[in-house]
Image: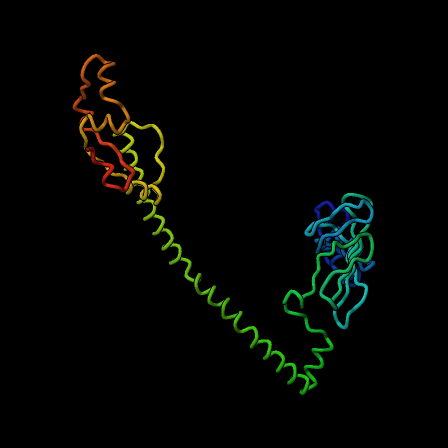
Length: 283
């Protein structure tokens, strides 16, 4: 009959008196390999390094956030809070690192196998919220006078912090409506882009008209000032030659005849940087 049951893949039911627990009945554990040392009070967990350390075995740096398979066990209590110890093997050498929780300071403490990279600072000097000690909490709950004094100190701290808090609120309110600010910036960008396109079209038209291949720079206030100092005069040919420092008689003798000027030269424009009107007249 028993062989028949095995042949038909029969499943024997769970008997509490015989199997005691479902784990023994199934000959397994829900945590599987993680619970192989559970009889010793050790559970295998995935431990993440809480801060930067140096391994004592290989002297290598282990960064915060590196994960290890660690053995977790309870080693004591801080009042009613359990203290757990974690033991793990360095992934770069054969050294073992042990760390445990410190509920009193809300931190992790290195027991052996490593050294902590000191990056801590004083919370009071850094103007952070200080954690209240257990004794002080108990005193605040039981001593009415101490609670009243503590409240007065807190009120004075609040009064000193009001200007800073007001500035922070004003800064936050200025950027609260991010949609309106984004719309304003995009509108301004479109207007500036339109102006730049118009200037680019004007420069392109001037380059095409003057047959220029060089890029044109933006007009500055210095350019406007120099342009305002220029004075243009339409003069005859003799005045043009005199202003250029040429001697008409000598030029006539060298050329073997009177010097003549083309119509284009007689109607040319001569630039004068002087502010005096007497320089533009010829006796």
